[in-house]
Image (cartoon, rainbow, N blue to C red; front, side, top):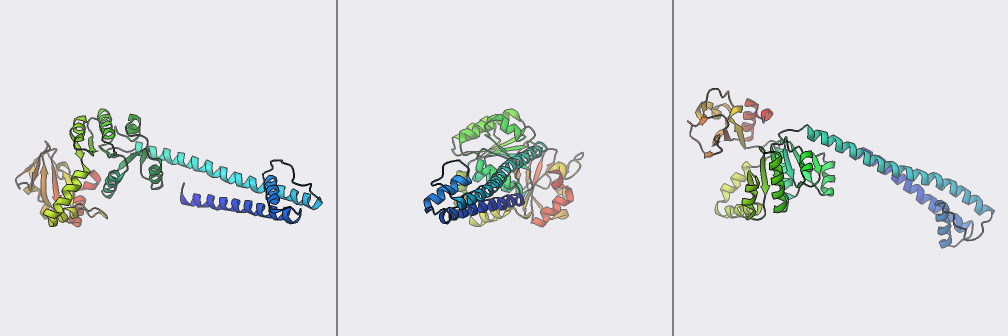
Length: 343
């Protein structure tokens, strides 16, 4: 529910509770001093009167006590009825609002294509989502933890509540139209099952899987994962590199900082740079002069990487270049070739 609606219902509920307490307070005082009951009997009489359960009086009531009881019953019927109606309305409205919001979310997911599916919103999944959000990439979270789902609902993050091991859940996340699947579940066995299921449904998508054990690497690759990441191994390598080549590692870390569009490295498809009816070389492209960016890598149509490619390297269909530049230079590159719109 939105914050304004929640605040409205809370204020009504608080009002109802205050009125109930006020009736109980008046009832106890009335029976204590009008009917001369002790405090326990006064509380008992107030409760059975307000709740109208029909138990017998502690002692026969005199005329002033009967008049007081009549007004107490009338007041309590109105106030209790009001409180019940407010609480019922709150519960029904919350359920209806969540259903409407979930249907709206599902329609949004159904309209997505070439998006990324993240299975598991733990530490790795959350970090992956943050990076994708910084780059403006559409993604859907698949999670079975109800508490996490509630947080995602509050933040209006596209999500599917369910087990990623089930095909129905993956289909709800739009796996048939997705470009990439990231499975970051804590169990290697679960990740393996997700990779198998995803590869059967979408044979062309890219699949990236997390693995805890090195022995799971080959199994996940065999199941259909394009890339397998071992966070513990990467973390250990990174810490060792900070000892051996600290300045270089710090420089590379800064290249990966994204936020407020502070992107230093961009991967660009050759088709986005020029009309590929006639092949060009990196020299002819002349990105350095046009945008200030420097080509530091080249990936050919077969997926082979070349670091610091020669200027005469031919840019063929299906190949990509990796460029390095300051944020404003990368932004100029994206603007010059409409890369953000095409990506």
